[in-house]
Image (cartoon, rainbow, N blue to C red; front, side, top):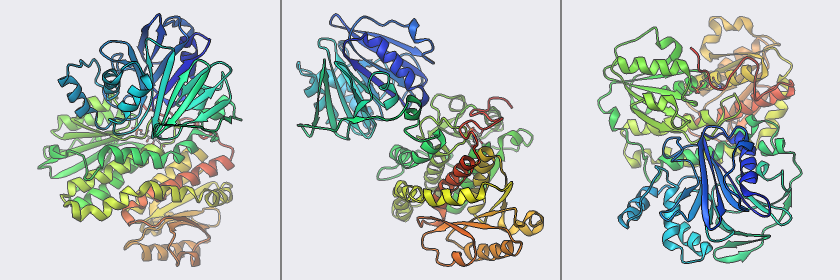
Length: 591
Ligand code: M6R
């Protein structure tokens, strides 16, 4: 997720902006840049990597400027693609967060009128459009420009000839800090708190003009007033958006992450070109950890919807199999795109003749360079070691890939697509039950062992639920297909081993109730995760976590979010560190 900072006031703008960008580092970035207005010119610096020691940078003297930390989405991480972006005259500079979905057609239109682009970004169309509309009034030019944009944006613009910033927001956050004789605009509150705790949250459709010592907000062309609020948090709290841990913040971001990922690939139809998979007779997934569990769900979806046989391999084990793969589509799933085992397995799959597709969250990561084809998840940077929002984004891409591979007509898949479209709302429905989940978690927090069970798609849901529990709460949690319990794991059950059962509304439901009865006979406490409409379950179990009803295929999303919350609150009740669990790293770059 990119970070934006803009300043107008009495201090040196470059110093304020660079320190504000450092406050936004928690959002993740691969490059950064700052523009300052100096003697009727725009002075710019752009750099790859981290800001490091801010005292070593000086852009130019000037009291108005804008800056940006970039998390690449269109065009690889590079100095050229870093923001701010300028127009042909070099007089207009823009920083942008979000995705301009119609940038390609706008770019072609602008090029046909002689505009020359220097970057691969979607953002650069904004500076060139503003250049076309600018007739001495920056607000008017920005207003006309946003009328041409589709997608999402938070943007801040400056012109070399005036100490003035113009900002606009639509579906990407922007907050204004109101100090004494100074204004600072940013993507998030931590960038502002060093200067003021008085803020105005902009709303979708707002256009903001920042002048020395004053500001005006417009909506639908009319001046509006927005409340000035006082932030009661410390900077550290603010980085987490007021949540106690990044993990919880990231779980609460899931509805937006689903919207962003669907926005990328689903309009009227599924916008994924799957032609490279033509003629493949099987699919092999290669991945590790949570991404491996996403792969198991992918197997379930592809086999069920597309009827193509699917294997799922731990990337670290695939290395020793090396099967012939001439008619195979190898799908690597990796949040970071840097997991060493997954990268090695991808290289081997290619050597063995597979076509390779990578489902990745980090643009420009090594996996994207190895794979023949790439689909990005739009989870944004994930800070907590525990994968939560990135896992759900992987699932959303997998639903779309499986539906695309199925060859179903648009009308045949419409019911499932409709359900996918309401998934952000369904997840909000899970999050609404957080208090009940917390109460159950507190009861579970004293146990040393747990068993997760499911059937069908419930098995990988259980596996991921157990992984979340063990990695952050340090409780030993195992996952088993419910039918396997009697082949050994029953010996572990008893009153000190709670069982978490995922009940899905399909042919497995009745037999799962039977398995739960068997578990209860061994005196284990049972927590069921099931739909709101499940009237039966209360008779069989000790605690119920209710989630909105969906087709069984989509329970992978709703149940997983509930189990992420269960793990989080259990770990919290045990006083665990949560965001950085012992012995674990976010990106595992060794084999
Ligand atoms: O970046 P990747 O998706 O390739 O990472 C794979 C695993 O290391 C990762 O999913 C890990 O299991 C999670 N952090 C667990 O929450």
